[in-house]
Image (spheres, one colour):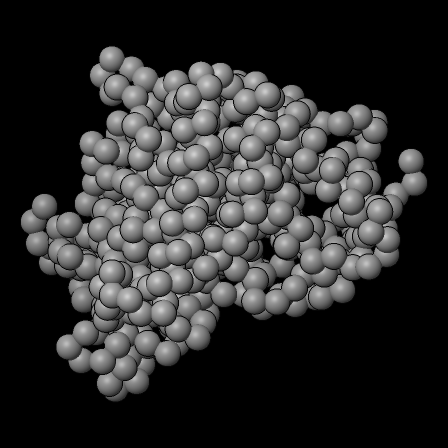
Length: 457
Protein backbone atom coordinates (compact mmCIF):
# COMPACT_ATOMS: atom_id res chain seq x y z
CA UNK A 1 0.00 0.00 0.00
CA UNK A 2 1.49 3.31 -1.04
CA UNK A 3 2.08 6.19 1.32
CA UNK A 4 -0.97 8.43 1.16
CA UNK A 5 -1.30 12.18 0.91
CA UNK A 6 -3.92 12.58 3.62
CA UNK A 7 -3.84 15.51 5.99
CA UNK A 8 -1.89 15.22 9.23
CA UNK A 9 -3.95 14.11 12.21
CA UNK A 10 -4.71 16.82 14.77
CA UNK A 11 -2.96 16.25 18.09
CA UNK A 12 -4.64 16.22 21.48
CA UNK A 13 -3.08 18.87 23.69
CA UNK A 14 -1.01 17.56 26.59
CA UNK A 15 1.94 18.46 28.80
CA UNK A 16 5.08 19.78 27.05
CA UNK A 17 7.30 16.86 28.10
CA UNK A 18 4.88 14.05 28.88
CA UNK A 19 2.04 14.66 26.44
CA UNK A 20 -1.20 12.95 27.50
CA UNK A 21 0.50 10.31 29.65
CA UNK A 22 -1.22 11.23 32.91
CA UNK A 23 -4.60 11.79 31.21
CA UNK A 24 -4.47 8.29 29.72
CA UNK A 25 -3.28 6.78 32.97
CA UNK A 26 -5.88 8.51 35.14
CA UNK A 27 -8.92 8.20 32.83
CA UNK A 28 -8.25 6.88 29.34
CA UNK A 29 -11.95 6.66 28.46
CA UNK A 30 -12.58 10.34 29.24
CA UNK A 31 -9.40 11.23 27.35
CA UNK A 32 -10.60 9.48 24.19
CA UNK A 33 -14.01 11.15 24.49
CA UNK A 34 -12.33 14.55 24.80
CA UNK A 35 -10.09 13.82 21.82
CA UNK A 36 -13.10 13.18 19.57
CA UNK A 37 -15.05 16.12 20.94
CA UNK A 38 -12.17 18.58 20.42
CA UNK A 39 -10.58 17.25 17.22
CA UNK A 40 -12.89 14.90 15.34
CA UNK A 41 -12.82 11.28 14.27
CA UNK A 42 -9.08 10.65 13.84
CA UNK A 43 -6.81 12.15 16.51
CA UNK A 44 -3.11 11.76 17.29
CA UNK A 45 -2.31 11.27 20.98
CA UNK A 46 1.23 11.27 22.39
CA UNK A 47 2.27 10.02 25.81
CA UNK A 48 5.56 9.64 27.65
CA UNK A 49 8.88 11.46 27.91
CA UNK A 50 11.11 12.17 24.90
CA UNK A 51 13.01 9.10 23.77
CA UNK A 52 10.31 6.64 24.83
CA UNK A 53 7.28 8.63 23.77
CA UNK A 54 4.39 6.62 22.34
CA UNK A 55 2.12 7.96 19.63
CA UNK A 56 -1.27 6.45 18.88
CA UNK A 57 -4.08 7.33 16.54
CA UNK A 58 -7.59 7.30 17.96
CA UNK A 59 -10.21 6.37 15.35
CA UNK A 60 -13.75 7.16 16.51
CA UNK A 61 -16.18 7.03 13.57
CA UNK A 62 -18.19 3.97 12.59
CA UNK A 63 -16.65 4.14 9.13
CA UNK A 64 -13.14 4.28 10.58
CA UNK A 65 -13.81 1.33 12.88
CA UNK A 66 -15.10 -0.68 9.92
CA UNK A 67 -11.98 0.14 7.91
CA UNK A 68 -9.64 -0.95 10.71
CA UNK A 69 -11.50 -4.10 11.77
CA UNK A 70 -12.96 -5.25 8.46
CA UNK A 71 -12.21 -3.39 5.24
CA UNK A 72 -8.43 -3.17 5.76
CA UNK A 73 -8.10 -5.69 8.57
CA UNK A 74 -4.98 -7.25 7.02
CA UNK A 75 -3.21 -3.91 7.44
CA UNK A 76 -4.11 -3.56 11.14
CA UNK A 77 -2.56 -6.34 13.18
CA UNK A 78 -2.34 -7.40 16.82
CA UNK A 79 1.35 -6.53 16.89
CA UNK A 80 1.41 -3.95 19.65
CA UNK A 81 3.06 -4.24 23.06
CA UNK A 82 -0.21 -4.84 24.88
CA UNK A 83 -1.15 -7.92 22.84
CA UNK A 84 2.36 -9.29 23.29
CA UNK A 85 1.92 -9.08 27.07
CA UNK A 86 -1.45 -10.84 26.81
CA UNK A 87 0.23 -13.61 24.78
CA UNK A 88 2.93 -14.02 27.40
CA UNK A 89 0.39 -14.39 30.21
CA UNK A 90 -2.56 -16.17 28.59
CA UNK A 91 -1.03 -17.94 25.61
CA UNK A 92 -1.36 -17.73 21.85
CA UNK A 93 -5.03 -18.70 21.56
CA UNK A 94 -7.76 -17.25 19.36
CA UNK A 95 -7.65 -13.86 21.09
CA UNK A 96 -3.97 -13.18 20.32
CA UNK A 97 -2.82 -15.51 17.51
CA UNK A 98 -2.31 -14.24 13.97
CA UNK A 99 -1.83 -15.36 10.38
CA UNK A 100 -1.82 -19.12 9.79
CA UNK A 101 -1.88 -19.89 13.53
CA UNK A 102 -5.13 -17.96 13.86
CA UNK A 103 -6.71 -19.38 10.71
CA UNK A 104 -5.91 -22.96 11.75
CA UNK A 105 -7.27 -22.41 15.27
CA UNK A 106 -10.41 -20.75 13.96
CA UNK A 107 -11.08 -23.61 11.52
CA UNK A 108 -10.71 -26.19 14.28
CA UNK A 109 -12.84 -24.28 16.79
CA UNK A 110 -15.58 -22.92 14.50
CA UNK A 111 -17.65 -26.16 14.42
CA UNK A 112 -17.84 -26.02 18.24
CA UNK A 113 -19.57 -22.62 18.08
CA UNK A 114 -22.35 -23.20 15.60
CA UNK A 115 -25.71 -21.87 16.71
CA UNK A 116 -27.06 -25.40 17.14
CA UNK A 117 -24.11 -26.47 19.31
CA UNK A 118 -24.20 -23.32 21.45
CA UNK A 119 -27.96 -23.59 21.93
CA UNK A 120 -27.28 -26.92 23.61
CA UNK A 121 -25.65 -25.08 26.52
CA UNK A 122 -28.85 -23.29 27.52
CA UNK A 123 -29.75 -25.81 30.24
CA UNK A 124 -26.31 -25.50 31.86
CA UNK A 125 -26.65 -21.71 31.94
CA UNK A 126 -30.14 -21.94 33.44
CA UNK A 127 -28.91 -24.33 36.14
CA UNK A 128 -26.23 -21.85 37.24
CA UNK A 129 -28.74 -18.97 37.29
CA UNK A 130 -31.12 -21.05 39.41
CA UNK A 131 -28.36 -21.76 41.93
CA UNK A 132 -27.44 -18.08 42.17
CA UNK A 133 -30.98 -16.77 42.56
CA UNK A 134 -31.69 -19.34 45.27
CA UNK A 135 -28.56 -18.19 47.12
CA UNK A 136 -29.88 -14.61 46.95
CA UNK A 137 -33.19 -15.68 48.45
CA UNK A 138 -31.42 -17.45 51.30
CA UNK A 139 -29.14 -14.45 51.95
CA UNK A 140 -32.00 -12.17 52.97
CA UNK A 141 -32.39 -8.44 52.42
CA UNK A 142 -28.73 -7.32 52.24
CA UNK A 143 -27.88 -5.44 49.01
CA UNK A 144 -25.70 -7.29 46.51
CA UNK A 145 -23.10 -5.92 44.10
CA UNK A 146 -24.64 -7.01 40.80
CA UNK A 147 -21.36 -6.58 38.90
CA UNK A 148 -19.58 -8.99 41.23
CA UNK A 149 -22.50 -11.39 41.22
CA UNK A 150 -22.71 -11.46 37.43
CA UNK A 151 -18.94 -11.99 37.20
CA UNK A 152 -19.34 -15.01 39.48
CA UNK A 153 -22.29 -16.32 37.48
CA UNK A 154 -20.62 -15.88 34.09
CA UNK A 155 -17.39 -17.51 35.24
CA UNK A 156 -19.21 -20.50 36.70
CA UNK A 157 -21.31 -20.88 33.54
CA UNK A 158 -18.37 -20.81 31.13
CA UNK A 159 -16.30 -23.07 33.41
CA UNK A 160 -19.18 -25.54 33.61
CA UNK A 161 -19.52 -25.57 29.82
CA UNK A 162 -15.75 -25.96 29.40
CA UNK A 163 -15.02 -28.46 32.14
CA UNK A 164 -18.30 -30.07 33.17
CA UNK A 165 -17.94 -31.49 36.68
CA UNK A 166 -14.48 -29.95 37.17
CA UNK A 167 -16.05 -26.50 37.46
CA UNK A 168 -15.29 -25.77 41.14
CA UNK A 169 -11.55 -26.41 40.82
CA UNK A 170 -11.30 -24.22 37.74
CA UNK A 171 -13.34 -21.37 39.21
CA UNK A 172 -11.24 -21.15 42.38
CA UNK A 173 -7.95 -20.82 40.53
CA UNK A 174 -9.33 -18.41 37.91
CA UNK A 175 -10.84 -16.12 40.57
CA UNK A 176 -7.41 -15.89 42.22
CA UNK A 177 -5.32 -15.71 39.05
CA UNK A 178 -7.08 -13.57 36.47
CA UNK A 179 -7.25 -10.27 38.40
CA UNK A 180 -3.56 -10.37 39.32
CA UNK A 181 -2.41 -11.45 35.86
CA UNK A 182 -4.67 -8.85 34.27
CA UNK A 183 -3.18 -6.05 36.35
CA UNK A 184 0.34 -7.28 35.54
CA UNK A 185 -0.41 -7.33 31.80
CA UNK A 186 -1.87 -3.84 31.98
CA UNK A 187 1.13 -2.38 33.81
CA UNK A 188 3.60 -3.85 31.35
CA UNK A 189 1.48 -3.33 28.24
CA UNK A 190 1.28 0.43 28.73
CA UNK A 191 4.66 1.11 30.31
CA UNK A 192 7.33 2.68 28.07
CA UNK A 193 10.05 0.60 29.77
CA UNK A 194 9.82 -2.91 31.27
CA UNK A 195 12.39 -5.14 32.88
CA UNK A 196 12.52 -8.67 31.39
CA UNK A 197 9.96 -11.06 32.81
CA UNK A 198 12.65 -13.46 34.03
CA UNK A 199 14.26 -10.87 36.32
CA UNK A 200 13.40 -11.80 39.94
CA UNK A 201 11.57 -8.60 40.87
CA UNK A 202 8.72 -8.94 43.41
CA UNK A 203 6.13 -8.21 40.72
CA UNK A 204 7.63 -10.70 38.27
CA UNK A 205 7.85 -13.39 40.93
CA UNK A 206 4.21 -12.94 42.01
CA UNK A 207 3.01 -13.01 38.42
CA UNK A 208 5.11 -16.09 37.65
CA UNK A 209 3.63 -17.97 40.61
CA UNK A 210 0.07 -17.10 39.61
CA UNK A 211 0.82 -17.95 35.98
CA UNK A 212 2.25 -21.33 37.01
CA UNK A 213 -0.78 -22.20 39.17
CA UNK A 214 -3.20 -21.30 36.39
CA UNK A 215 -1.32 -23.36 33.80
CA UNK A 216 -1.01 -26.33 36.19
CA UNK A 217 -4.73 -26.61 36.87
CA UNK A 218 -5.60 -26.39 33.17
CA UNK A 219 -2.92 -28.94 32.25
CA UNK A 220 -4.08 -31.33 34.97
CA UNK A 221 -7.73 -31.24 33.90
CA UNK A 222 -6.76 -31.66 30.23
CA UNK A 223 -4.43 -34.56 30.98
CA UNK A 224 -7.02 -36.34 33.13
CA UNK A 225 -9.69 -35.93 30.48
CA UNK A 226 -7.38 -37.17 27.73
CA UNK A 227 -6.20 -40.19 29.71
CA UNK A 228 -9.73 -41.17 30.69
CA UNK A 229 -10.85 -41.15 27.07
CA UNK A 230 -14.31 -39.93 28.04
CA UNK A 231 -16.35 -36.80 28.46
CA UNK A 232 -17.17 -35.36 31.85
CA UNK A 233 -20.08 -36.76 33.83
CA UNK A 234 -22.26 -34.02 32.31
CA UNK A 235 -21.62 -35.14 28.73
CA UNK A 236 -19.76 -33.47 25.88
CA UNK A 237 -18.39 -30.34 27.53
CA UNK A 238 -16.35 -27.93 25.42
CA UNK A 239 -13.02 -29.34 26.59
CA UNK A 240 -13.99 -32.81 25.35
CA UNK A 241 -14.95 -31.29 22.00
CA UNK A 242 -11.67 -29.33 21.81
CA UNK A 243 -9.70 -32.52 22.50
CA UNK A 244 -11.57 -34.23 19.68
CA UNK A 245 -11.36 -31.34 17.21
CA UNK A 246 -9.36 -32.33 14.14
CA UNK A 247 -9.32 -32.19 10.38
CA UNK A 248 -7.19 -33.57 7.58
CA UNK A 249 -5.95 -30.07 6.79
CA UNK A 250 -5.29 -28.75 10.31
CA UNK A 251 -4.59 -31.82 12.45
CA UNK A 252 -5.60 -31.38 16.09
CA UNK A 253 -4.62 -29.35 19.15
CA UNK A 254 -1.63 -30.48 21.19
CA UNK A 255 -1.60 -30.07 24.98
CA UNK A 256 -0.15 -26.54 24.90
CA UNK A 257 -2.63 -25.38 22.28
CA UNK A 258 -5.52 -26.84 24.25
CA UNK A 259 -4.45 -24.98 27.35
CA UNK A 260 -4.19 -21.73 25.41
CA UNK A 261 -7.68 -22.09 23.95
CA UNK A 262 -9.10 -22.95 27.38
CA UNK A 263 -7.52 -19.86 28.94
CA UNK A 264 -8.84 -17.58 26.20
CA UNK A 265 -12.33 -19.02 26.53
CA UNK A 266 -12.23 -18.56 30.31
CA UNK A 267 -11.04 -14.96 29.97
CA UNK A 268 -13.09 -13.75 27.02
CA UNK A 269 -16.00 -16.10 27.67
CA UNK A 270 -16.99 -14.60 30.99
CA UNK A 271 -15.82 -10.97 30.92
CA UNK A 272 -18.14 -9.78 28.13
CA UNK A 273 -21.19 -11.56 29.50
CA UNK A 274 -20.53 -10.46 33.09
CA UNK A 275 -20.19 -6.82 32.04
CA UNK A 276 -23.34 -6.87 29.91
CA UNK A 277 -25.46 -8.56 32.58
CA UNK A 278 -24.13 -6.57 35.51
CA UNK A 279 -24.72 -3.21 33.89
CA UNK A 280 -28.09 -4.30 32.48
CA UNK A 281 -29.23 -5.00 36.05
CA UNK A 282 -27.73 -1.73 37.28
CA UNK A 283 -29.49 0.23 34.53
CA UNK A 284 -32.83 -1.49 35.09
CA UNK A 285 -32.54 -0.77 38.81
CA UNK A 286 -32.16 2.91 37.93
CA UNK A 287 -35.04 2.86 35.40
CA UNK A 288 -38.13 1.17 36.90
CA UNK A 289 -40.36 1.81 33.85
CA UNK A 290 -37.97 -0.08 31.57
CA UNK A 291 -37.62 -2.83 34.18
CA UNK A 292 -41.40 -3.20 34.40
CA UNK A 293 -41.64 -3.41 30.61
CA UNK A 294 -38.98 -6.15 30.50
CA UNK A 295 -40.71 -8.07 33.30
CA UNK A 296 -44.07 -7.85 31.53
CA UNK A 297 -42.49 -9.38 28.42
CA UNK A 298 -40.83 -12.16 30.43
CA UNK A 299 -44.05 -12.95 32.33
CA UNK A 300 -46.14 -12.98 29.17
CA UNK A 301 -43.77 -15.09 27.05
CA UNK A 302 -42.46 -17.53 29.64
CA UNK A 303 -45.47 -17.79 31.97
CA UNK A 304 -43.21 -18.93 34.81
CA UNK A 305 -41.21 -21.57 32.93
CA UNK A 306 -37.42 -21.64 32.56
CA UNK A 307 -36.26 -20.03 29.29
CA UNK A 308 -34.35 -21.99 26.67
CA UNK A 309 -32.47 -21.21 23.48
CA UNK A 310 -35.67 -20.93 21.43
CA UNK A 311 -36.80 -18.01 23.60
CA UNK A 312 -34.09 -15.65 22.35
CA UNK A 313 -36.26 -14.81 19.35
CA UNK A 314 -39.38 -14.13 21.43
CA UNK A 315 -37.86 -11.86 24.07
CA UNK A 316 -36.99 -8.84 21.90
CA UNK A 317 -37.22 -6.21 24.62
CA UNK A 318 -34.94 -8.15 26.98
CA UNK A 319 -32.48 -8.41 24.08
CA UNK A 320 -32.72 -4.67 23.46
CA UNK A 321 -32.00 -3.97 27.14
CA UNK A 322 -28.81 -6.01 26.88
CA UNK A 323 -27.72 -4.35 23.64
CA UNK A 324 -28.23 -0.91 25.18
CA UNK A 325 -26.21 -1.98 28.23
CA UNK A 326 -23.44 -3.10 25.86
CA UNK A 327 -23.62 0.24 24.09
CA UNK A 328 -23.18 2.25 27.26
CA UNK A 329 -20.76 -0.19 28.94
CA UNK A 330 -18.90 -2.17 26.25
CA UNK A 331 -16.73 -4.89 27.82
CA UNK A 332 -13.92 -4.05 25.38
CA UNK A 333 -14.08 -0.23 25.44
CA UNK A 334 -10.87 0.18 23.41
CA UNK A 335 -9.43 -2.15 20.74
CA UNK A 336 -5.82 -1.75 19.63
CA UNK A 337 -4.07 -2.54 16.37
CA UNK A 338 -0.79 -1.63 14.62
CA UNK A 339 -0.71 -0.43 11.01
CA UNK A 340 1.57 -2.44 8.71
CA UNK A 341 1.56 0.09 5.89
CA UNK A 342 0.66 3.75 5.58
CA UNK A 343 -2.97 4.46 4.82
CA UNK A 344 -5.70 7.06 5.18
CA UNK A 345 -8.65 6.97 7.55
CA UNK A 346 -11.30 9.61 6.96
CA UNK A 347 -8.86 11.60 4.83
CA UNK A 348 -6.23 11.63 7.61
CA UNK A 349 -2.81 10.06 7.05
CA UNK A 350 -1.88 7.14 9.30
CA UNK A 351 1.81 6.17 8.91
CA UNK A 352 3.20 2.66 8.71
CA UNK A 353 3.94 1.24 12.15
CA UNK A 354 1.43 3.49 13.91
CA UNK A 355 -0.48 2.21 16.92
CA UNK A 356 -4.19 2.65 16.21
CA UNK A 357 -7.14 2.31 18.59
CA UNK A 358 -10.81 2.06 17.74
CA UNK A 359 -12.98 2.78 20.72
CA UNK A 360 -16.48 1.35 21.17
CA UNK A 361 -16.68 3.54 24.29
CA UNK A 362 -16.47 6.63 22.07
CA UNK A 363 -18.23 5.43 18.92
CA UNK A 364 -21.15 4.17 21.03
CA UNK A 365 -21.58 7.78 22.22
CA UNK A 366 -20.92 9.49 18.89
CA UNK A 367 -23.53 12.24 18.30
CA UNK A 368 -23.76 11.37 14.59
CA UNK A 369 -25.30 8.00 15.49
CA UNK A 370 -26.78 8.40 18.97
CA UNK A 371 -29.05 11.23 20.10
CA UNK A 372 -28.71 12.09 23.80
CA UNK A 373 -26.13 9.32 23.96
CA UNK A 374 -25.84 8.99 27.74
CA UNK A 375 -29.56 8.27 28.11
CA UNK A 376 -30.60 4.63 28.65
CA UNK A 377 -33.07 3.74 25.89
CA UNK A 378 -33.45 0.08 24.80
CA UNK A 379 -35.63 1.15 21.87
CA UNK A 380 -32.51 2.35 20.10
CA UNK A 381 -32.28 -1.32 19.09
CA UNK A 382 -35.59 -1.90 17.36
CA UNK A 383 -35.00 -3.51 13.94
CA UNK A 384 -35.88 -0.23 12.21
CA UNK A 385 -33.47 1.83 14.33
CA UNK A 386 -30.65 -0.67 13.84
CA UNK A 387 -31.14 -0.71 10.08
CA UNK A 388 -30.86 3.09 9.94
CA UNK A 389 -27.40 3.21 11.55
CA UNK A 390 -23.98 2.36 10.09
CA UNK A 391 -22.92 -1.23 10.80
CA UNK A 392 -20.05 -0.20 13.10
CA UNK A 393 -21.92 2.39 15.13
CA UNK A 394 -22.27 -0.49 17.64
CA UNK A 395 -19.58 -3.15 17.85
CA UNK A 396 -19.21 -4.59 21.38
CA UNK A 397 -17.98 -7.91 19.94
CA UNK A 398 -15.41 -6.33 17.60
CA UNK A 399 -15.90 -7.00 13.92
CA UNK A 400 -14.49 -8.26 10.67
CA UNK A 401 -12.56 -11.54 10.45
CA UNK A 402 -11.50 -11.22 14.12
CA UNK A 403 -15.04 -10.75 15.49
CA UNK A 404 -15.66 -12.65 18.72
CA UNK A 405 -16.41 -16.29 17.94
CA UNK A 406 -18.48 -16.58 21.12
CA UNK A 407 -20.92 -13.72 20.60
CA UNK A 408 -23.94 -16.00 20.15
CA UNK A 409 -23.02 -17.83 23.35
CA UNK A 410 -22.72 -14.51 25.18
CA UNK A 411 -26.16 -13.38 23.99
CA UNK A 412 -27.70 -16.78 24.80
CA UNK A 413 -26.33 -16.71 28.33
CA UNK A 414 -27.23 -13.05 28.84
CA UNK A 415 -30.84 -13.31 27.67
CA UNK A 416 -31.51 -16.49 29.66
CA UNK A 417 -29.90 -15.09 32.81
CA UNK A 418 -31.58 -11.69 32.63
CA UNK A 419 -34.99 -13.23 31.91
CA UNK A 420 -34.70 -15.61 34.88
CA UNK A 421 -33.60 -12.83 37.25
CA UNK A 422 -36.46 -10.61 36.07
CA UNK A 423 -38.89 -13.49 36.69
CA UNK A 424 -37.80 -13.81 40.28
CA UNK A 425 -36.75 -10.36 41.50
CA UNK A 426 -37.42 -6.67 41.51
CA UNK A 427 -34.36 -4.60 42.30
CA UNK A 428 -33.61 -1.08 43.46
CA UNK A 429 -30.30 0.72 43.01
CA UNK A 430 -28.25 1.53 46.10
CA UNK A 431 -25.32 2.93 44.11
CA UNK A 432 -26.47 5.31 41.39
CA UNK A 433 -22.98 6.06 40.03
CA UNK A 434 -20.34 3.40 39.33
CA UNK A 435 -16.74 4.62 38.84
CA UNK A 436 -15.03 2.87 35.93
CA UNK A 437 -11.57 2.04 34.71
CA UNK A 438 -10.30 0.42 31.54
CA UNK A 439 -8.05 -2.62 32.08
CA UNK A 440 -7.93 -5.59 29.68
CA UNK A 441 -11.69 -5.12 29.79
CA UNK A 442 -13.99 -2.49 31.28
CA UNK A 443 -13.77 -2.67 35.08
CA UNK A 444 -15.79 -1.09 37.87
CA UNK A 445 -13.70 0.81 40.42
CA UNK A 446 -16.55 0.67 42.93
CA UNK A 447 -19.68 -1.35 43.67
CA UNK A 448 -23.01 -1.41 41.86
CA UNK A 449 -25.20 -2.55 44.75
CA UNK A 450 -28.89 -3.31 44.40
CA UNK A 451 -31.59 -4.35 46.84
CA UNK A 452 -33.19 -7.55 45.62
CA UNK A 453 -36.89 -7.92 46.28
CA UNK A 454 -38.35 -11.40 45.60
CA UNK A 455 -41.40 -11.24 43.34
CA UNK A 456 -44.55 -13.05 44.38
CA UNK A 457 -45.16 -16.25 42.46
